[in-house]
Length: 473
Image: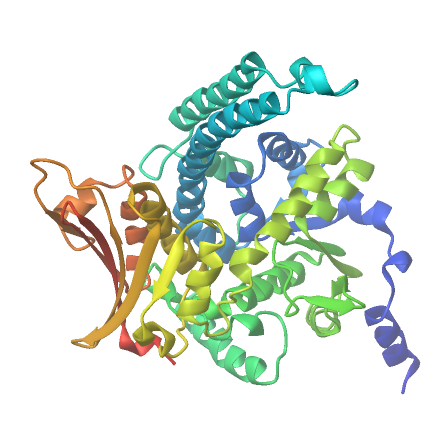
């Protein structure tokens, strides 16, 4: 092997301690993926402000960039992020209301039972009256009631899917002139063809998305979703080639093994295949490196702005961890409908789910697990809020090339209440956009080809998901 090839090999296998991070942070191009930008909807306000502050830093803003694929993914998925945030208000309100009711009863019961012990007369030390009083219980309840008032205020201020979107506007202002050009259809077709071969051999990036369905459309071109990571990767290499870049850093919220090299349970940096490819196809690149959102903020605190809060770094890390609930059902794999429902039901532990044998026999399904689990969470939340017995039954039946997955719960009868029906295919459902959680998830599921129907008979609440049989493995 020639000395030149040995040098290239050693370059690929360098440890991170051999990289010149001072130069990288002073002159390198930093590329951000769609997950990082979508996290602006999810991060706590303080961490969000710190991340935006880094984007806008005068020493840094001229060296940020993102691919056209990222812009397309961000715009296509932002409504899901907004809807997920909006749904959390109802869930928190439900939990606090339940806690208030239970706390009052438990507190009063505790006082009665302590009084029965007659501790003042029969014990020399224990004095519960110093702590456990009717007034203290009322104070605790008032604190929780104040929190409910604050939740109402915050929800009024929080954007819904049909409102203006200041985060979207800010992202495109920050990245104005810093977004790559779209590939034409021929280039996209070539990437897809190459991607088929790469995914067969588990060549990164993106092979974990192999079974992700659908595509995005723009300008008559089709951006196949399962090749989204590969399209972005090709954009990064093209950018490095054309501008003869020396340092390139990808900041990503994607922590799957089709980007990251791992050892002993830790992420070690970019996969060696990625380093080999970018150093070969863009020879000007001296170093390619990767950060997740949390580690990016950590090093931005060192190299850019020491005012970045440690809490922002930990909150970004916690967000990455919490996203694993959805990402544990990877779009690259088929998943069990029953298992998905059981996972969602963990958020309503007092809700009992009854599965018909028809559900237990269902084959695995392919689709966007995030959209599916959010829909199930909303359906179960409805059952919890409005059901009379905290019981939701789930059944399945085939009809006309579809599987009707039915969720049903009993609800209190209301005098004079007429049965009501609406569907994601009707104008009535569209008119409810932004006003009901089911309307929002119905819109999201429609993009997967899944229709949602709701029947409210007054005594029963029924939600049906109409899933094309072709989505089942």
